[in-house]
Length: 87
Image (cartoon, rainbow, N blue to C red):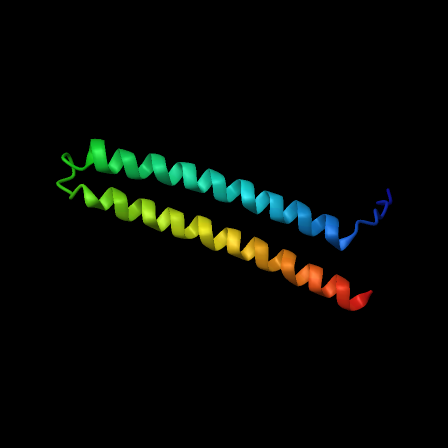
């Protein structure tokens, strides 16, 4: 059984990758908000933690969200520059 080769452009692959990363970053941000609120409100008294630990966790997830979006924008910018140089 032979596999058929499908020609896919580099731009399409980059768009699929970028959309996947953006969706993952939004899921990560929502998950981070849930975790930080649960740490700050529900589990802080039980685990003898400070209420600010939830805020710190939220800032870590926001930083990850921003870093992933920065990587996506940089990849798209590099692809656009590469496309203009080739043409």
